[in-house]
Image 1 (cartoon, rainbow over the protein chains, first blue to last red):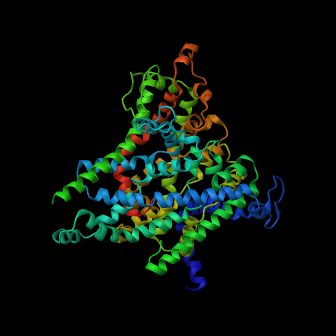
Image 2: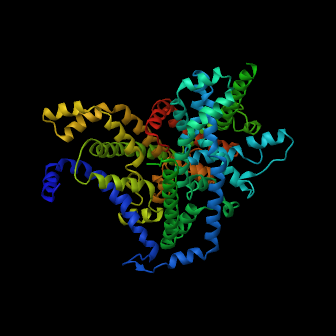
Length: 300
Length: 292
């Protein structure tokens, strides 16, 4: 299409641009401008007047700060724990739910297991703080039943990361199984019939039919999960955090919140954000292209 | 043949225990909030039946003007926010899904870029400050006026509307705006209902942007107030402005139970909508292939 042609088309389609305008204004003002403004990481913030360019100053400060190293390490540890211990659980749940006949029990299991996904982290924090209460919380009731001493999980540096893992599992194990279940439902039922005729047990059917059919969904979700690796679950940590355990669960986003929003060191905090964003981007693009190369399938 | 039956039974048992692990903590909170404050100490951490029965906790939080205000604030943010979300998402989805125009590819590329790179909370905060939106609901509502994932779900739905219907309208002389309002929107009621639930749940549960953008406590939504009680253990606010509070009554109260009652109030709207959510969300998520 030649330039004159384009102009003519733009004029003819003016109503489309008018309809698109509110949405585009939103994206430009509330997404693109704050992204462009992340150049603040290379500037000193000024309340009045233009910000001053300072190059890599804030990054140098960041990488020489022991606090930042701790925060980075916490983020990596918590995310790794979550990937190892939480990522496989919804797959397992979907395999188990798939073995249930369609009926009231299956409906009950699904309805109940999806519920926590719709609770805010504030509510979940409230529920878990009660559940882990050192005096009469449910978990300690069980421990005492087995003659074990009560533990104060919420203030224990040893246990708090596991609290993050288990509470996230509690929230998402059911809901995250939906996509796997959807993939299972697409498997041709005749495969199972043939396997049964050959005498395959339930477990063998899972192992040799269901699981292989789930692999592409597993890969896609794994890549998407890696994209959130540097986030490590901000809302969760923000609501389950307290002073006694801050040093072991302080992650990048809570650090940015504290030094930026609370202490007003805007440039320094933006540098930490930018670092997080770039690593996240590299992870998601890297795994996307790697997956495309290996399996011919990427995320988009 | 026997082994077969045992495997199934074990699977059912595992899943049953899993559902108990979800339900017991929830019912324990409910039982705490409904127990007689004098007897709540007898309630075990795994107990699901209230010890005695009393609505005193609910009476107190409902007579706290600060909490009542926050419930109205949440309802306001949720309703106005969701309406704006639906309008912006639908009109943008229509143009992107059903029309051809110069620059469409660029718009789509930018949208995908937005999905993989989020702005910093610092620059977002400074933007709200520069726009003089701090301490106004506009900041909380505009922060996520369109969710790109949901936009793509709706686009996919719009693309499935048969072309023949749109062509017929065009021949009758209808313009794009008319086609959008008179044909596309009425045909997409199920998809729009799904998105309304998606967005509604998001707004009702949102607390972080409200925490940093709204410094006037009278503007706080319920989740921020709840966080104040549960996470920061601020019991003063919990009783501020409650009339007829005598020292005897104060001594008889149990703060844990009051917190539980507030949690229940924050969860009730979700429970009321849950049957609808189950019907639409599960379907929407399966169709869209999106986890959010």
